[in-house]
Image 1 (cartoon, one colour):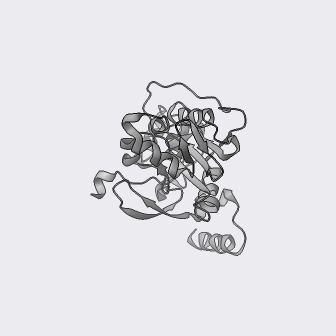
Image 2 (tube, one colour; image 1 turned 120 degrees about the horizontal axis):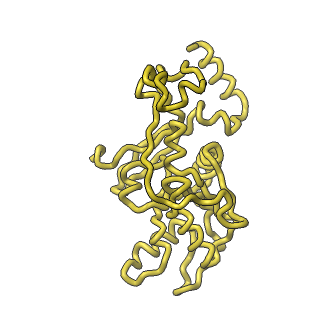
Image 3 (cartoon, one colour; image 1 turned 90 degrees about the vertical axis):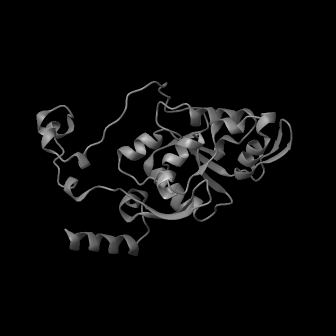
Length: 234
């Protein structure tokens, strides 16, 4: 198995990497936490060794089936069922919906190479971002995109990160706006949809907005790397 993986990595490095290979090859990024701490990550599928040879069968994938009790807990996922409104696949005509491979490709071939033109945006509130996010993402909470005289600093910060110049109240210069890929908690989360709708309302170009509908829930569901809880790094 080890020799096979080594050979596979050599092949990957010899040829252009297709996006489907990125979870195996890994995407090297630097992530900046809100307190200024910077840490390097390799975004990849983090599948424990004991999970690799589990058979893809009905018995193994029915969580309440007795057979599943023979499988290590490290190979299982659990989710909390709670409120939320399931979002459509197409949020707004003209805004492209993407999945995990497209997010990885966006990070590897867009954000890393031209950070002045591309940005990965976690639209959730700050405490969510601090708890764990997609490495290399930037936190722009959805509610900071709406003008509020009591939070002008946050408002100006948000649009500066997006490459948008605020001319005056209600007027913006989008000539240098970045292509932004936004996400939040999952397909039932309304935070990134609200951010996208607010951006479009003020004139942000639709062709410069991408939406990762699956968000953190889908990202974690396929075992891709998340940042640690900021509290554990202090």
